[in-house]
Length: 118
Image (cartoon, rainbow, N blue to C red; front, side, top):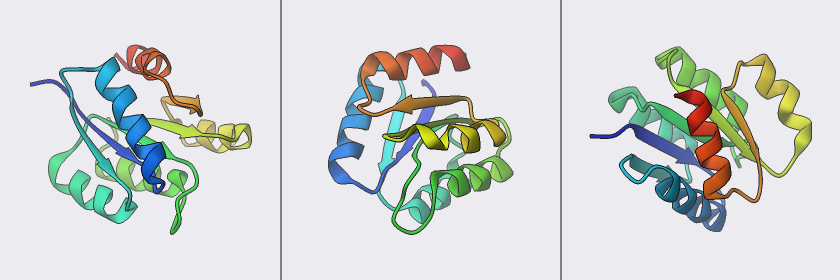
């Protein structure tokens, strides 16, 4: 079985687009999407995904906070942020994110980040 990838974005259409791009870029992966970051964290606590794509701005928290919690659970998880805003790049760099995608997310951008992780 391929790697397990989770995607977290509280906007339904953005999440659907992200999931579609991940499926195209990594067809053998087990891909799960979450609109609620707490549900994603609960899933990760039990299932230890290999990669997490995180939106920076979530209703109840930030992608940075979710990424930090994921790293505490599993320091080997690949963290890739996606956002419409460049100003979060410094925060992502400080937490040693593995990648950063500016929206709109495409399969090509996802593939490029996953290749860097490999």
